[in-house]
Image (cartoon, rainbow, N blue to C red; front, side):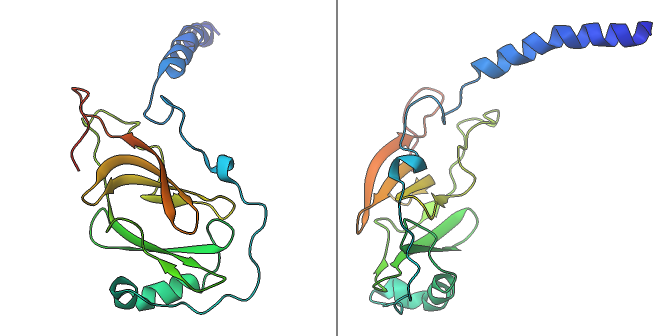
Length: 182
């Protein structure tokens, strides 16, 4: 009984300390207000017959098999679109967006998305999202967690409006506060 009381007393002292540290932790994810999936929700999901894919660009034709196979899985973005993604090496991803109603393939306004690294190894809360490309069937918001080849590193927020339009950008910062290079 005495051992149990001692253990309970130690745990009761640890509780407020754990709560204090949890309440004051800050991550890149909650420091600023950024667009959220719910802010761009879609009321209706397309359920009709999908138009065959139209492969119009060299990128589309080069990856025709993965694009057609991914498209066959159905709508997964912004109510009527299909995001099809594939790997392009370690920590690298390419993708296209296909309109299920028209078959039009939209290539993103950058070549690929690369993994981005924390400014120091101790930054355990560096990533806000689990994938390089994040999207939902019920939302027009598409979020890229990583480096846009040749452009920028961080979290880039896009909205689908016939093409991807950049809404916001949360850059990766180095320990000295400067923006990380891409």
